[in-house]
Length: 409
Length: 211
Image 1 (cartoon, rainbow over the protein chains, first blue to last red):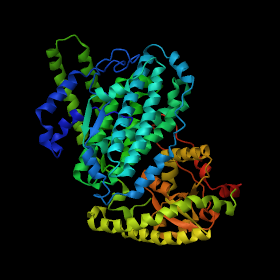
Image 2 (cartoon, one colour):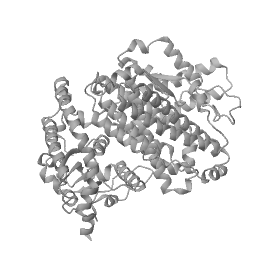
Image 3 (tube, helix red, strand yellow):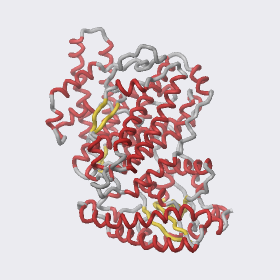
Image 4 (cartoon, helix red, strand yellow):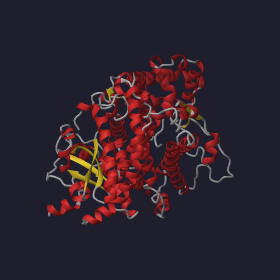
């Protein structure tokens, strides 16, 4: 689980007129939560949740609008969905095939460090060092959150669906391996994430199972595209290969891609999540959430991407377009991200967001800051809503297409 | 180059394993299929070809069990689509094949998957052939479970299987030159994979013939 999805809560406010449970989303508490999140929108310092030794004082974790999130879900509903006694339509052959693929464990021997790592870290000084530490920390947190969710699902589904449970456990193996590799990277910079502390202290976002499927599928597939793009770029431009971890992205990204395939199979096994108008609305909603979150995050950290020789916005648009094409194989509707207007909206969101951050840095009284933020939040919200309302692209797996017998391959 | 005997000897174990599993999958999936047909909404109803395909597979599976005992033929599973899609547009497909090849090398496993360009066995599948743009490419393997996984990944491919008494027979193809237009607007921050990457996965006998 490589991508972050921080905007989901505030975005759901703006989409509520089209959701199936409007009253749930109109509650005052939710709205006030949004305001508080906006108020603390400045990014946490890189050393948040990082300690030089286990005995060091632990800082309280700062949550911001775009911080990587931890997720939990309705495990009882998950058990019901994949109970082989209750649901006779599960495609066992597909899950058996996935299980075999994960058991193969293509990367069992791959994430091994060498002395190059420490040498490279020591050469990274100045602003780039700090930026890199933040990259490692955020990536580690994101991978670790995937590990926690999959491990728990693997444990909870063991009785009702041992095959699906084992697949979740094997995916948590992959995520733990990724998180561990990143955390060892932090040790090159004399830092370490206290993952045990994170497990207990972080706030967990609750998602119902169907949202876990949309969100996690996208997260894994966009992770694949981010990692493979960075890998292929650096392979052609080795002068920017400032830290050896990027050499491992080729194998790493295939793990992410396979994880996404599993969520494809999970969704296919529950066609009610793919075959009606609500599914189309939610599909587009999650696509937008993931793309906007990534774009705002990366533009805010443009120095990192430029530091490894990429044009940040071009990189993000490439990742968004390719992820959208991949997602069109399973989601019943996706956004029209190749419409140039979509990028223009993203760029306007970046402008609003950067101004919001700047307000947070000023010495104004909090009341004044709040007043200044209102037009910017309004602008951001209206751009997001407008992007959501752009005409979508119809899509989905050919397995569900009514016209499949007439398709030419 | 594989001898016919060698190929059969090496190829049989995974097939035998798949065959042992297959009858149970078929017998259990048949009632499921029927039930699904009754329960599913119109948009999910299976085309008749799918139903007949399942039935055919069941029959084939019985023959397969008998044949394996005699050591006469092997079951080959395949996914087929046009070459433009498989070899030019789906770049992750190339990555997966090389990953699997690397894995087989690390574990000293014998390769059990190949790419076949314009395979002759398509002549036996007229219903598939009429739905293919040409030139066509097939991913062929004796590992049916892996082919099921690849179907999930690729989605826009057609699946089926057949029996063959030799690897050469199974992987026979009609000579074809592949050329793909360069994309008009390549915006990725890296170059496209070089054409010809698929040569690694073509049956060796074909490559020797070419020489």
